Image 1 (tube, one colour):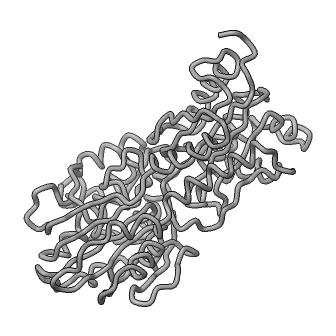
Image 2 (image 1 turned 180 degrees about the horizontal axis):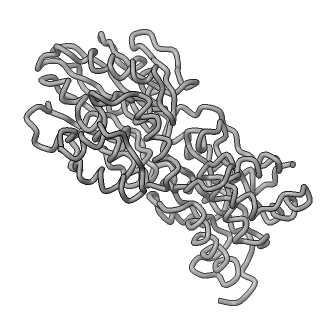
Length: 428
């Protein structure tokens, strides 16, 4: 299908959001003065390799280090070793890399500085289980959490309390060296403990919190994991813990900044831009129904916004998998949005993950327009049945409306844009 002007505008907004969070742009301004001792660079996440390259290109003195990124997200570095591992379900390469990160920061002194580069995806890329647990245990837990409908905050709380590296444990291993965290946020609210499950920041949550989450979603865990949680022996490091070094934390990019970049593109095109929120959570189809209601009220009555306009939002929705489809929270949102809009004229939308991967697919997201449902029916696709099957990826691939970016080397979570380009059909 030939893209329309509105679809091209949607894609420009998405590209602008991704560009605003590129490490090459965001890392250099926050690099510190040279320490008296060594500079050791560590990190994990989908953007960590690109962040490491930005450090190398702008750091004049000696350095060494190791970062872990997702398969396909490595970029060439000369002084910092780049290791690839699996995401979203961890693998043995990630387990080995996590152990090596702990070794990398052993034996540092008070004059040394650890520069920690953390971005989204680091939770799965650093799967180092507590003693008595196995990688297979963490893999099964990860799969169960991803399918449960738990929020990213809830998932990371559980992960922190069954990890030998997250929940501040990597920071403790750096002691007495100073730690400077440069974080690229992919989580609603930009809480450092939820970015890669907080390996280098203290964690105020508890084992009891993790247990409550597992019981809420009826997720079974091995007896050894229960023992760690019920005894409190799996407790993460808390604020004020004497084992933690001096830690300084800065955000280099956030979902809000990405949305503001997209809004600037929309305004240049003559649209009013409204950012509804950068931390919207909930079931993807429920969020879609709510935003569809706002869009319909706008296009029909000129409330609460005047068209032409764009409604922008970010955050991280969830999908409770019940069908046999390929999942993907952004395509689930879009398919539910299309069903709720019922082909309303003048409304187009794009939703995608800024890392280029929606769910476990190498597809960022998709586009919808007023003709989406009609074209689906013409191909013999039943939109509601595909939604019930959690098969947004299959649906949009069949229509030719998938958005594919390839590895973006960044990650500031979900991006949603709804363009309303028609005048109200009723007086407000």
